[in-house]
Length: 75
Image: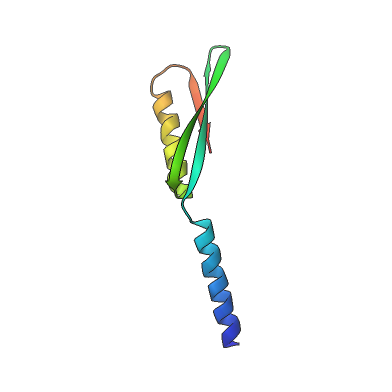
C-alpha cells in the first residue's frame, strides 16, 4: 500500500514538471484593415505557458492601441 502511494505521488509530480516546463512559443497576430489583412509572428522564448499567453495578449493589446485596424493574436 505504501509503495503504491509513493509511486503514484512520484508519477503525479513528474507529470506536473513536464507540463509546467519553459518552452518556446510563437504568437501569431492577424490585423484586419478595411478589406485587407496581414499576419505577423512573434517568438516568445523560454517561457512558461501562462507567461507566453500573457505576452501574446500584450502583443494584441499593443497592436489594438494604435487605433489602426483590428488585431487578434493567439499562440
